[in-house]
Image 1: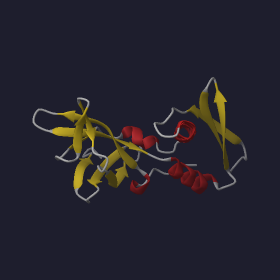
Image 2: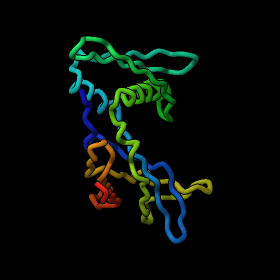
Image 3: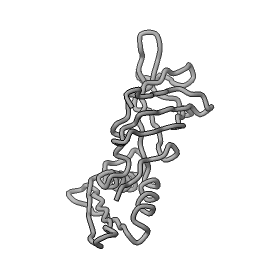
Length: 176
């Protein structure tokens, strides 16, 4: 059974850091998936009765175990991972993170680990300085507009656009 790769509309971008270059300012972007994409793909792949999840606290850390049923044998297979706190809601963020990490262990979204390094030049107004550190403006948004993968599930084409629909990053692996 093959778990499908993520579609462009199931992948989000976030600014990891904003840095001063020689003559310009840029941002390092990261690709990630959210828990809704994981649940959707689990439903598509295993059916709504073919998977389950459980959260438990171990040593003060939130763990999630996802169990999926092999449709051929009926055997349940379990994958588990731990979450980290979010800046927003501590427990909810930790539970969501542990679920997303366990889903990656099942195989959902592993292809995101093959992402190229993403550096986007920023225009004035897309960043600001606070306490001596450059930060992304709250209004700065990027979306994955196109993505494709090699037969080995490696990202071979990626295009990101900003909130105004302007292409800001393009990657194409010519060794396809």
